[in-house]
Each structure stands twice: as structure tokens, then as C-alpha cells.
Length: 137
Image 1 (tube, one colour):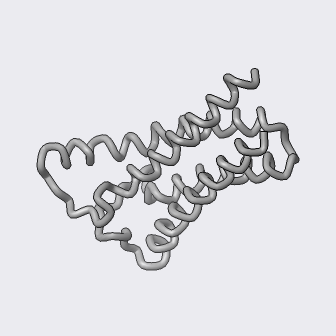
Image 2 (cartoon, rainbow, N blue to C red; image 1 turned 30 degrees about the vertical axis):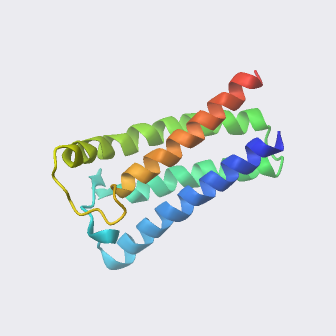
């Protein structure tokens, strides 16, 4: 199913570019983009971990697109990593969304915390991949 490979490739590329941009800004300027609070995990910026997870997903999607690994294996890898991404990004996003709902506005330039956008990408990748697995198992 070529459309599955193309969709996950494009979504993972978008996630990789977004998290890569956030990570690059943090690495070279020591500030978080968009004047947001910068969440840390194990002493490192959360965007670094997001970049790592998107890199794994992107690599798997690329290998699947190039037919180096079977699509079903690509989908299973993406499901596992996207679950980790959902838990990780959700851990940082839920408290911030709670603050927004309570009326505490942290001045998010994009309307939501950047972790929320990573969470959206992980949920999309998970949903598409689990759907693919269910149809092809």
C-alpha cells in the first residue's frame, strides 16, 4: 500500500523538521523558540527527545518507502515509537492545556505549546499505523 508509506513518510518528515528546528534553536541559542517555557526531561530539553523519536519514525518510514523493510514492520515500529511519543508529549502538554483552560495564558505564539503539536503528529502517526496493521493482519 504505497499511500501508507507516503503518508507516514511525509508526517514523520514534518515532525522531524519541526522538532529539529526546535532542537537547533535550543542547542545554539540556549533559549526556547516562541518565548515558551522550555520543558526538561532527565536534564535535557524535551525537544531533543522528540527529535530522537521522530528520527526513528522517519528512518523507519524511509526504509518502508524504499522497500528495505516490509510495510507491516514499518507500521509496528511506528506504533511503538508513537505510543512513547504520545506519552512523552502528553506528559508535558496536559498540564499546559489545563493552564490554558483555567485562563492562565503563557503567551503561546502558535496558540498551543509546541509539545502539543508534537503530540498531534504522534497521534496521527499512531492512528494511521494502527489502522494499517488492523487492515493487513
